[in-house]
Length: 565
Image (cartoon, rainbow, N blue to C red):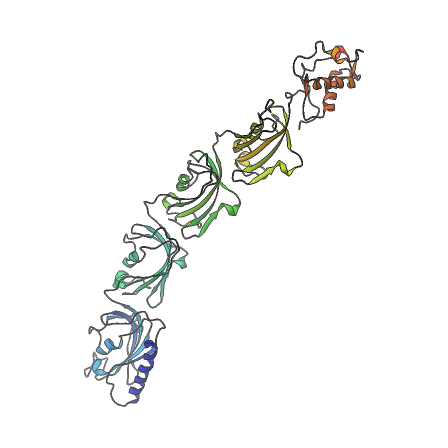
């Protein structure tokens, strides 16, 4: 209220004096432009920096001007360094205030005048714009504008910091900005690389904190100023946003966010790992994400393929584990950064999720979850089997399932019809047995992956053997399960007429299978196999086999007439 009412009182006083033809008895102050906010007023012993135009009251003629000299006037108030009228007239001023100070002769240069410029008994009028105030006892002023809810660390001397700032004079005139350069200001704190006031004002800050730091001239650039934009004896105002902080002695920081209930194995040097990540700076600004590419980051651990900090942080992880990893720049990309993506001396924050890992020496892992009490017959090479399965990634993502089809999957073991790891997992099973099988990529689809299967993916199979038909060795259509009839032809000649047509040959083979004396190749049409066998024995192609052209089936391989399933 005082600031709002005082101008009217002063103006009224001026008006009354001017209307009076008598001499001016005291300083007359006209505060014709007062800022809305005035955090500080001029007091005795304060130093001030101001611009002025000086003119004579009688005719308005200008006798001096700091504007014309292009340099503000600097002085201390109330200690006789100014004429008495100005010592009084400047008291109570605010920065950016404009006032007109009328000084009578006895409070100016009196009856003598000065230097041929000011005549005797001259009433002087000063139009003043106050630019700056400070006092020798002033300290650095800090005003926090905003602060993050969590602050795990604050700046201390010897830290290296990156921050953005807008720099203005106390009058609000801008002199510098890191934003205009689109680059943070990077420096060590408390090492004398900054002006003293900033070294002090930046202490105790959190990443993401905003504060205003007001630095008096003697803790800034002092009497010399700085360049063309910071004048001598200027109070500086910095609005600062702390983007990053680290110490050269910092090590990796790891925060475990989520660990699976069971963790039978942890990552080690030489393992190959697939993981997702979000990469940000300490202020939360994102610089990279594997999720955006919809592809994991895949690498070997401890072999120098990734930055030092990440190489170290990837040790001791479980499948499915989530961690936050904070990597100081000397363990990341150092002072140079990476192009326009990662600035120099940047602390990197990675939120990672381990999808899977394996070692190139890993075998197929098989866990039997159910086994029938009676298990006399187990699967092996050449057997025809039916099985149910679910195939997932190690994070539980389902890739394929036999439930998606009308019937269980069928394959002949040993024919390279399935990936090697699945072949291994299906071998030695009883009908009704269930297994969980973990297959590393070198036993699965390798570095290239497959349709729907990511590159270098570890696969998790849930298996159940539904049916098992014992097979015959590759290249054979039929094998004896013991010693065959000797001599063979009389046994084949069921009606004893010395000739065996296709129908009689078929009856003979099927009888051997029924009595458990022989076995046909499973998974192939029986009639086709028997016909192929018959044709191989019917040398003269007359539709019947006689003893002279008989070749024992157990002695000569018979090739299938169609591909195996």
